[in-house]
Image (cartoon, rainbow, N blue to C red; front, top):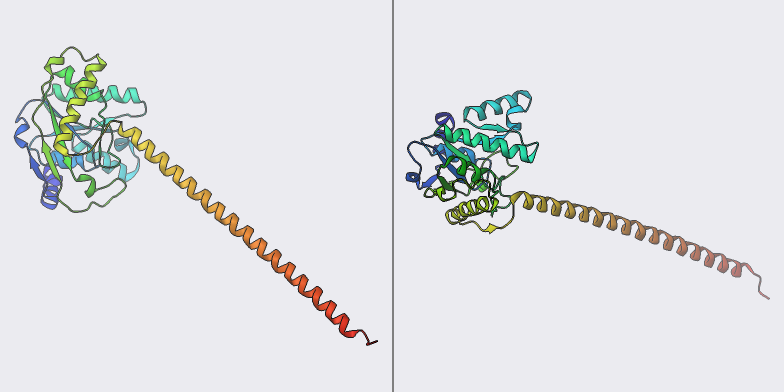
Length: 276
């Protein structure tokens, strides 16, 4: 897959990379990255010599039809692990177990702490579950990664990518051994996650938003729905006003026609009356 996909990606898009020396030549590590585009999971592994295993939603592996089979084959080929997201807690536990297995195998585990793609290019609050618990359970170093401009290459909803040069900045490994044995302390999980997100923010230069990206997506969707409903209501109001205006104009025309007719009849009668 590195030859079939990674090679053409590097030739076509020519991604620039800073901090490759921070990726260990061997041994386990966690790559914690911001998430701007679907293509993030392609560009990062393409520039590394080692395999990176990400977790992916189970739908990529279970979609029926030829397209679904090809998609499943591709994600299996690049080493993605399916996670069932039907239940939030179940999905989180499955992601943690998958991450621990990858780390215990001495491999690189890639994770997006935001939990989903940024809806507007800003950096959102990291979720304290997967990243922190895998790091504390395994003792693996966490390497912050910043994807640059990948959202411009393939924005959400766009199938064909725009050919331009993205960037990848890789930070120095973060050691959280001071928190060892405290993986059940929610304040520790929060502190570890926030520290990683701060490093990603410095690398990416993104504006930080202290809310979850999933909540931001809901707000954007609700705002779009409200705008659509308001537009629909405005159109209905305009249509009603136009209908009422047309009805008024018809009434006025009818009244004018009746008035003209009454005036004509009266004038005609006066002209027919004999002179006295």
